Length: 355
Image 1: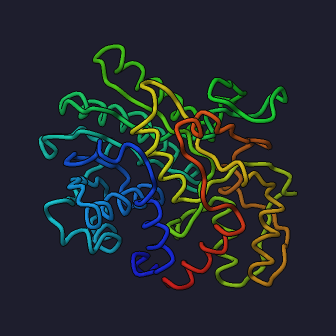
Image 2: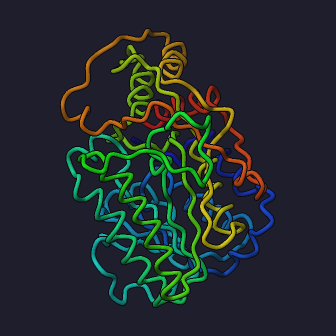
């Protein structure tokens, strides 16, 4: 994929985010923010917003991006590398303890994680360790650096299967998870990552907040992403038939990536310490079949049905209804700006343009 930062529609979305009337932008002036999983779909957008704030609002934010692949980072953040005062990329696997490569951090955002079915199935141990050992290593860094706030990006998947007693999950809901499966590695390790944050708060006074994201999509999705919506989008980009590997009755919440990124920033800057916040666009609750139909119409193609292979099937979520109640997030002032139909069209246009 080409440089998304050359795509005018994406730039306009970043500009809109950076000009958001978030009443706490001043908290970031002159601060240092460490972001793991930097080249990922959501973290990369957060970095784009912060760097835009530097260029256009003079916020003087120092971004320390952490990831495992320098070549990918240089391609994704080519403009950022030119600003050595405000941007630094550190090659580091968060599952390894940090040395002295980072001396100071005011905020840490832990966004590194496997986030799609094939990764869960082919790297089940790495899925768990990134969410557990990686979280511990970053919390240790937060402790050493005197970090003001630690942000652990969690997931709708921690709620498990809807027991049929609610329409939407609020932050206090506890659904069913079968922990004796390989697929449980992702939601269970996200749960344990949240528990680690609480443990570090109790033992060391580490301030933290947890944005729990719905399923996220947008033009920064990676070519390797195998989530159903990502596969649908890639098919639409290529004007191919949309392949549905189930009846499509699953009902999920979705959020466009720039809205998700702003949700993380709202929670970080305005959220109450030790609280979790659901981040979901309430106007983008949709069944998998309707989502596929929307993209088929956008591409001028049709839906076809196909059984998943064993690797894909092993990584699929078993949840059939996972809708998030985002009322707590909205009380902070956050609101999704780009809803499903517009977001899908933006995504397809951007990926086509950046080939």
